[in-house]
Each structure stands twice: as C-alpha cells, then as structure tokens.
Image (cartoon, rainbow, N blue to C red; front, side, top):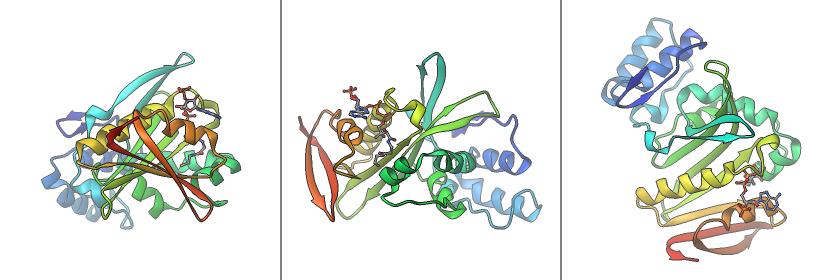
Length: 231
Ligand SMILES: CC(C)(COP(=O)(O)OP(=O)(O)OC[C@H]1O[C@@H](n2cnc3c(N)ncnc32)[C@H](O)[C@@H]1OP(=O)(O)O)[C@@H](O)C(=O)NCCC(=O)NCCS
C-alpha cells in the first residue's frame, strides 16, 4: 500500500502489525485518533505507543537498494513495524560487536528501547535499516541510528552491521545518508563514540569528505566532523 506519506508491505504480517503499518502511512493529522480507536477495538495491545511516528513524515528519499553478493539489500528509514526485526538483529550480534556498539555486554534489548529505535520522528531521531529477504519474511541485517544533540547542534551516529554483511559498503551508505539528512535538517556536523581499537569504525568515519577531529573521553574515542570543514 502506498500513500504520499510512505509505503508498507502488508503481506505476512500479524493483524496488529498490519494495523500499525497502515496507521503510520495515514495523514499525520489522523494517526493518533486512528491509533486510539484501534486500541479500543482490540487490534493493538494497550501497551503499544505510537510515539514520534504519530507526527512523522517518512523520508522516502532516503530509500535505496544495492546488490551484495547477488542478494538485493534495501536500505531505508525504519518504520514502527520494524521493532521486532531490529530487536532480532541486536540479539543476533556476536558478543564482540555488542560490546563495540553498546560499550557493554548488553544481553537484553527490551521493547521500550526497541520502540525508541523504530518510532522515530526522522528529524531529531533517525534510524536506518538494511533489509534482505522476501516480502513478509524480511530480516534486518544492519541498523544505523542517529540522534540530534540539540545543545551542540550535532548528530550522534552509531552502527551495527551483521557479521556476514560487514566490509560490503553498508556502513558507508548509512553514513552518507545520515550526513545528508542531518545537513538537510540544519545540523552542523556528525559525531560518534567508539573504542580507540575499532579500526573499522574509525575507517568508516574517515570516508566522509570532511575534516575528522578526534578526542578521548573516559577511554572512548570521539570522532567528529563539521559539514563546513572539508577534508
Ligand atoms: C564498524 C562497522 C559499522 C563498519 O560497517 P561496514 O558496513 O562493515 O563498513 P563498510 O563496508 O562500509 O566499510 C567502510 C570503510 O571502512 C573500512 N573498513 C571496514 N572494515 C574494516 C576493518 N575491519 N578494518 C579496517 N578498515 C575497515 C573499509 O575499507 C571502508 O573504507 P574504503 O571503502 O575506503 O575501503 C561494522 O563493522 C560494525 O557494525 N561493527 C560492529 C559494531 C561497531 O563496531 N559499531 C561502531 C561503533 S558505534
């Protein structure tokens, strides 16, 4: 189903997922009302929250597809219906990648946290996902998150790419899209926290066409760049 506010594939989804998906592509003005009605009718669990997706307009211009080893990979902004798939992606990460991404041996990726990844406003918070697989059986193989730090007008970015898809360009595509979105929203630059030993993340950040600054904070490396300072 396609509207001017986005598109969803409803095949293979539960009733609850279908209802949430349809509400998120309705005109933003009607989403909250539709959501509350669907809850009253029992289509959506009382614990569900539409969050920022109530007002957000899906940025379709950030969608693209690439081919990795003969497989079609779709890169696109996350939607509320991606909550479970993002959670499954995090649970599938090897311990060392969980540590690199979250700076601790996190073992629980709870629902409220996942909701904050998938229910985004696409301006202050933007999550991108890379998805493979047939309609209705798709799997998230990489997630890029970004959050605007309002006090310094910078956007913090963080990534996790499934092991078998690492080194195949997904990080670079994510970073380019997040930089373009941040620039378009008037942000001055990007920053990322990483371990000083994370060569892949440091190399990835340095693929940006901007001057990269580094500093240390409590043993972590902070990478940053400003959009008005070309490398
Ligand atoms: C870091 C990470 C996001 C990189 O994503 P990716 O999709 O594998 O990266 P890409 O394939 O787009 O590669 C980007 C650049 O980094 C370089 N690179 C990738 N892996 C590398 C590695 N292991 N060592 C050194 N450089 C590496 C590539 O050469 C490429 O540069 P190039 O195009 O100029 O050659 C990914 O490895 C990952 O998810 N790691 C686990 C979680 C993590 O560390 N997150 C970062 C902290 S938030």
